[in-house]
Length: 228
Image 1 (tube, rainbow, N blue to C red):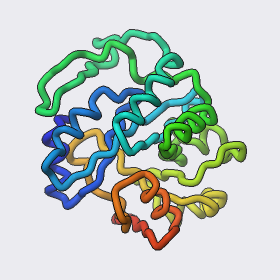
Image 2 (image 1 turned 90 degrees about the vertical axis):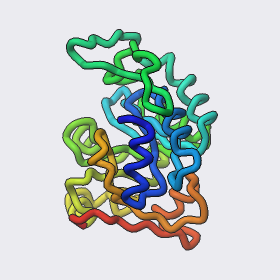
Image 3 (image 1 turned 180 degrees about the vertical axis):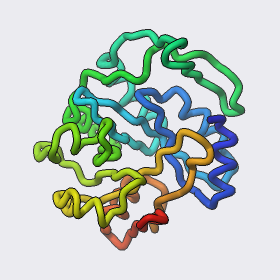
Image 4 (image 1 turned 120 degrees about the vertical axis):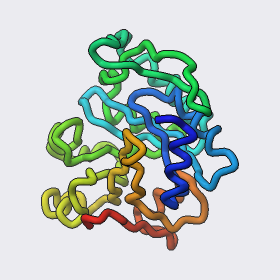
């Protein structure tokens, strides 16, 4: 997706907070943050990390500096496999206008060598928030892969896919009752930017989002999915 079109689409749908989270990569975050300058949209830097267990987790931070430090820490654990464009397609890095900058030569769909716990520890060290993604989904979801929520990781929030309601998720996975839940807002195309989640927070920060999802300090979260 082209950075200025991401911001224009979000504004047109009254969405004022988004996270840019490419798979195992952060090279396009700065361009989207630059494209958002002067707009009503706040962009949080994030990454969808695929851990050793083949579990997807959303790692969100407040600043570009934080995620760059985190990424440099995990980069040595990324497999040095070159992308096969003919098989996997192009992996472009663009500037704030959407113009081509370079190709990402490293294959981005592989798992890193870090465990979920190790990834969580590094995210915490860098003042971020790790949320296991689409935990109910058969592909790369925590429950289908592990079958349980690890108790040696202090997880607070889990993400459910957009194809299940929070009520149904709690029926299917009763252990979710002990966690804050957020509906997946994963968008691979402009039409997917729908704004499933609403936060009542003082400022657009990771800590405020955490409070809202946990219902703390008067912060609130509301699921806007048409299925909920």
